[in-house]
Image (tube, rainbow, N blue to C red):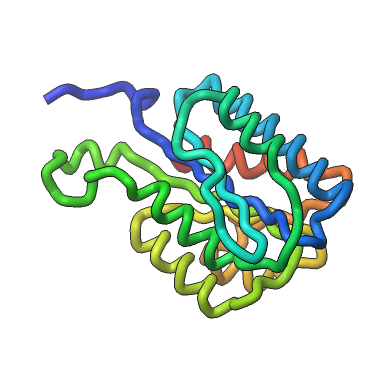
Length: 193
């Protein structure tokens, strides 16, 4: 069997971005800028990314791709409105990341070990249904995904720590510093993939 260099390990990253009404104006512009920088930097890694947005519903706005142009246009097209259905966003992430027949045991174990999934959540508030969000996060973790959360000071950090199960995977983004939080998340992904 072939032994691949670590650079060929497959890494899939799903951005799960809050587009609820409270993100209107500057917060949305800032998260778009930070997420765009993030995907541009990932473009040099060969990692696949997808983009999910959530407000009153969850939507997969860009399925997994290495094409940074598609990712940029998905991010720039985000608009706000509605509530904070984080659970529905996480369910979309689960579907997007498990859309491949990789779990049925026909693919060698070594490949599964080389495959890492990350879910990078950005939110500015309390979810509509915290219990449903916890269940969806648990399913992602059972599926081998590592959850990372970036939140504004208004969002409940304790709740987000319960989703990631690790306070080191939760970052606060104050106005003007969203880019820094996304950069911290990027470093976590580099260390853990």
